[in-house]
Length: 216
Image (cartoon, rainbow, N blue to C red; front, side, top):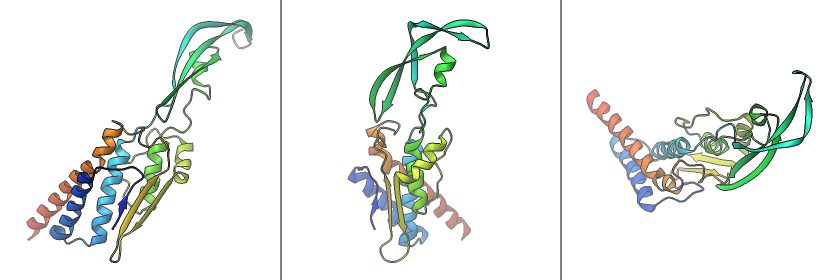
């Protein structure tokens, strides 16, 4: 019953999650397929909740340089000179600085080169993969995610889930090249994703087991 993702996880944490799957079957009477779905949901929630959504704008600052070519502002009836701004772009953890000219800070913020068009793409890819695998989407919100990222998320993800039969499975794959870099905490967050999922699943099982005992 493979439970895979496009990033690698420590074997000990994977084993911990599988122990909770066994416990779900023994203590709650879940089928193997139900246990796989519950575990996959916990993993998706752990990764999705930890994936950052970029701010609307890239970092930018004035350089102190002014354009020598003055322009006329018809609305205000006066001339003005554009200012130079330095913009920082981070793509997959790689920093790139470039410069633009704008009338003022407000105009610079409206420049398409300053606006991050696909903010939230990494989160949406995990959400789309989870949805395609038939998992609950709790913990993978869409707040702050741009419309283009929502549309592109489907194209850069793959999800599949089979929860019946003797060999249930769940596959979650993100094809966003900076999926790991988008995680809060970076590589360390990747290493603890399965561990967090195992702990969350353990709490859920304990709560349900206690309720089950109380109903008897």
